[in-house]
Image (tube, rainbow, N blue to C red):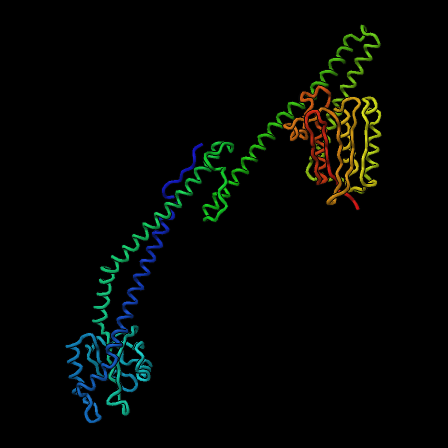
Length: 499
């Protein structure tokens, strides 16, 4: 299996680089438009600031007004002279309603018959204000900076001298010059800045891409290794210090990888146990079936040649094997019932010591035959528990039966009930048998496992402790074992105490 490697167009680095390029392009265009707009605004404000009193100076310098009256001849001469000398301005004579009476521009270029008086009056009321823009007589849409003064005087106004400070020719020249300036200077500066930003962005994206790529490669190698042999330091925990999002992602992937490996190992172990279980079931079923079949076949073929004692022995052996087979089948069905989804124990309150006495009575004869003493010790006085009485009896049957089976002659089995703690009491069943090796303690509750006799030559199926563990887990309690070689085994389980 080869690690997936995306094409250049689908790679993270290409997407980040393309996104950065688009962002820088948008920023560059926005900067160009903004710079052009601000240059135009600065130019308008500058002209209006410098030429704010131009209209009044024209009246004063050219003597348009004589003895409080407007000299129309002098006005026409002034218009013609300034149109030739300074084409950056346009001069208009307005009446008190804003109608254009005379102007310095070509007749076919003036498109308005009047201009709005609102900016004119605002400028006259606030002479220090330089931002009002007035109507451009050459256009129905544009507005431009202006200078204005009432004539012949402010005390006796008959009209207004309205000077547009940015003529159409000047606007075209400014726009062309601004474009050239932006293209020449702004283009170089902006292009250089964007190039540097692009290089820095690409370098940073490369660093990010390399980290993600290394992480992706390690995960791909882990997948190729069948989730069992991760390469390098993929399982090594990272430090718990602060880090960026990729660092956190790496940390979580390592934790996830360790969890996956543990789960994968557990699955493999379960699969091995399943295979072993199938093999053990086949062996445990085949052995008594073969024995039963063999003895019955012998009886069928040699029935007339066997005496009554031999026939009885063969039938007893076949019956014992059938009984062992029945016990194995019953245990398998019981375990399947306990592991069925939705199965819940029938909980009720009952005195635990009375149940223990009943179970001990069932094993009294078997213990006496083996000369094993059954001793019950209890700190509390007949404590009440909340559990399934039938299932707990099955637990006690299995544990006490195993203890008797593995105990030597002339030994003692101690059943102890400890006082409740944290809402639960503990039952301990301890024998003086051979004990269990430390490497077998974690396996004693697995199905078909026997720490004492792995080959199960003693007739036990190896399901009893597995059933015990499942029953205790259904009660949401704990079961565990403590043992050492030649020191006996001590099985413990807890039950919910009832006040």
